Image (tube, rainbow, N blue to C red; front, side):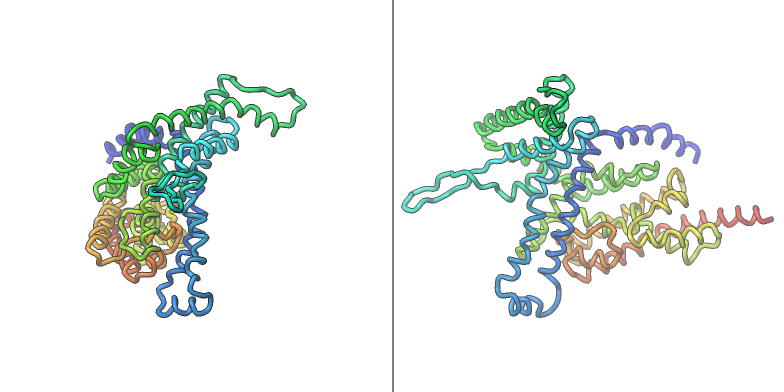
Length: 438
C-alpha cells in the first residue's frame, strides 16, 4: 500500500498536475464548454421533433401543417451548426485571459481568422450554362459546425499566440491618455490583428495551390481522421477512461483534463449522430460525449452511484451510512465529490482498484450491446451530464427503452464490482468505531 501511495504522490500526481495546469488544454476545455448551453437548448427542440409517441407526427402535422418538423428544427440548426464558430471565440478568449491580454479582442480576431480560412465559394449552374461555376458569398453551415471544430481550435490557439506575442513585444499603436479605453484597445489590436489575418490569408493561398484545396481539408485528413479513429475505437476509449480514473485517483479532475483532448472528438461524433438521427439514417458512432456522461459515469466518474447504494443499504459502520445519506442527492445528478473525497477514494489503494475496473467493465459491456444492436446508440441529443440515470439513457438514445435498460444493467455491474471492496472498507471502519467506543 505504501509503495502504491508513493508512486501516486511522487511520480504520477506531479506529472498529472503539470498536464492539468497546461494553459492550452484548459483553454480548449473552457472554450468548448461555451458551446454546451446552446447544444442543450438545440437538443430540447430535437427531442420535441422526434418524441417516440404513436401518432405524434400526424397530430403535429394536423395542427401546425406539413412543414411543422422543418420549422421546429430551426433552433437546432442555429445552435449545433455554429458550434465551431462559438468554440473559436471561446478558446481564444480563455487563452488570452491566461496571458492577461485583451480577451474580447483576441476572441473577435480568432473568429475572423476562422472565417478567413473557410472557403465561401459554392458551385452555381447558371441558366443556359454547360457547367457550374464557383460563386462566393455563402458561408458553408457544415464547416461552422462540428466539421470545422478542429480548424477552429487550432486557429484560436495560433491567433491568440500571435496576438499576445505582438502585444508583449509592444508592437502596437498607443493612443493618448485622454482617449476612452474601448477606443484605445481597438487601436492596440490593429497591428496584431493585421499580422494574424495576413498570416492566415497567405496560408490559405498556399494551401489552395495544393491538392488539399483548403485548410479544413488539411486538418480533416492529417489530424481529424486519425484522432477520430482513436476516439471512436474501443481501445482508444478505454485508454481515455483509464486516464480519467487515474487522474481522479490523485485528486485531479480527470474528466476535465482528458476532456480537453477527447472532448472535441466525442462532440464531433455526437453531431454526426445528430445529423443521421434527423435524417432517419443509421447512427454511425457509439463513442460520443453522451456515451461516457450517461452510460459510463453513472453517479459521476467511476460510476459511484452503485457504491452509494452499498453505503445506504449495506453499511455497518456509522461513517459509511452517514456518507451514503449525504452522497445520494448529488450522486443522482452524477456528482460524486462527496464519495471520492469523503470515503475517500482519492489516494486509497483499496478503493482505487474498483474505481478503475468499474468504468472499464461498463465501457466494454455497453460497447458490445450497442455494436450488436441490442441497445440503441446515442442519437446525438445533447442531454446534460447531470441528467439522472434511466431518464438520461432514455433521452440520449432518442426515446429508446433499451437505453434505460442499459443504464440499469451498468449500475448492476458496478454494484457487483464495488461490493467486495466496499465490504472490506466498511468492515475496517466498523472495527475502528468499535475500538473508539470501547
